[in-house]
Image (cartoon, rainbow over all chains, first blue to last red; front, side):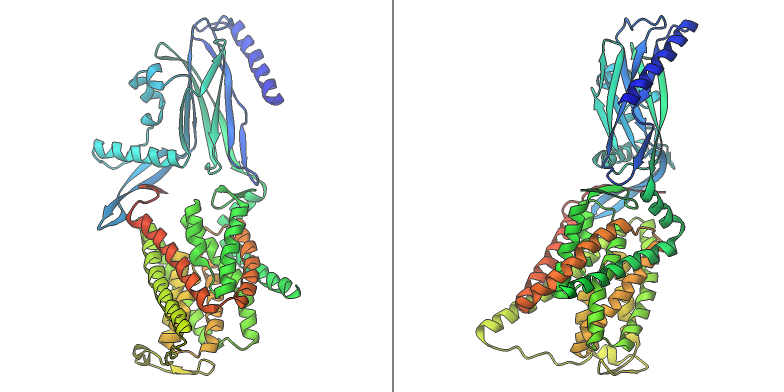
Length: 258
Length: 304
């Protein structure tokens, strides 16, 4: 926490410098995240990422106006095939499918108020604010109705898995200046480069935005195991066999002594 | 105790996995089955991806059968010739299983096929076992003895060409029969993460007609090598073997197996069989429920 405070102080100092240069009419947004790297290793059971910062008018005084803040944390996009089960002859089978070229593997949005009260649909769609507005780039021409059904299915599936989140009212603003939002990353988050974007919105218009990167990676022994399994399948398999035979044999030996 | 699984990409409660291993270990000690039929579905219900569950369960079955193979080979309970033919079939089977796995994954039907296989196999074998043990319990109560089934191989086995002598099994049959059996079980091991002991033993007894004192040892021998082949095959193709998960399961199951075998010596074998039958039927019922009533999730996704 001490580090984050220090960062904020640095940020604010930088901001004062900016203010002195003067210029734009739009407010200035200073953002920071509590962690720029998230390490997946033993003991990791999900984590909370804190996104915080300040909104100031160009004059450097505190914002005279109320701003709405929307923060979006987005994981690396993937090409995926989404399958839908239907009941056929009494059994649930995967019956339909569609492909998306750019489905985010993780997506979380938090805002000061419900998003439809902050911006109109067009703006929400442009900035991808909210699960409804994800740009998934479906592959192949399917009719819009079916497309919408599949998109809703993807959101439902990932929301259940804890990978898509929406928290209306998850951003708190104090004194019209400082804001903060806490976003949950569950233990099954995929690895890769995440971007945290912050939007300051006034009168339905995005007046300032900033983004920073967060890297989610495996570390230490976990990373070694994943790499080993990926690159040296044969040796990895032999190791697994060796461990299982060894443990089975050892247990038999130990219990024979008892 | 949170443990992060590097291949499954999620964190689990380590104690639950060890407990799960112990539960199947107790079963394997009591009944001489590997317990894969229980670990794989339970891990899937717990939220571990099905492929990782099946691949890691296979290496757990390896560990669970090691001490059994040592014990059986010391008392001369393994027909090595028969066992080697079956293992050869089993290795071919894991190869076929890997191809099937990839094919089914591509057309998106892998989970349905696995569920159907579980329901059909566990359902039929569970009910056969239940019927048999209820009959045996009744017979025990009324004092009648059921005449032991006459050992004779199935006419279909006798009609296969080419015959080899298997001295320890007391058989003169075509090696194609055990080869095919091993191959079939190998496919199932690859797809379902089961050792297949509960299929092997009855088939070896009633279809091949093997001498009863080498059936358990030889089936363990086949299970040991086929699950090793399966682990290797998964490591090379699906890359879904999670060493951390497998070690936790193994830790539980090898300890549980010792406890189970102590327990088995004290209780009646007929009642034990009934308990096993009920457990098998429960797993089948749970799978059937997901298949027909309500799946865990309507939508599933896979990388393109």
